[in-house]
Length: 86
Image 1 (tube, helix red, strand yellow):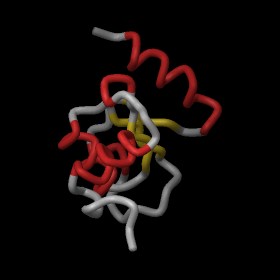
Image 2 (cartoon, one colour):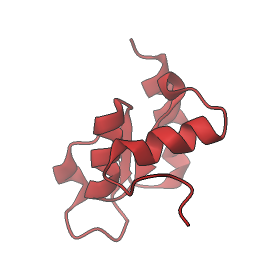
Image 3 (cartoon, helix red, strand yellow):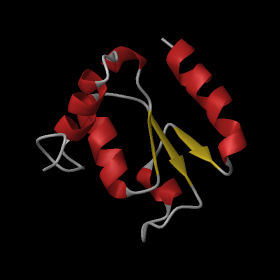
C-alpha cells in the first residue's frame, strides 16, 4: 500500500508526503529529475529544482525548473535562495 493517495505528477503525492512528516508546504522545495516531479511541484505550488543527471527521457532543462542543478553540491544554496525569495 502506498503512503500517499496518488502517484506523481498528482500534487497530492507531494502535499501528503509533506503533511505526513509535519512539514510546511510553504517551506517545501521539490527536488527531482523528471516530468512527474515537475508536475507534482507545479500542482502543489512549490519551487522546483531538477537535476540534469537523472534518468528522465525529457531533458530537465526543457521542464523549466526554477533551478537546474549540475551536481548535488549546489542543492543547499539553491534551496536557500528559493525559500528566501518572495
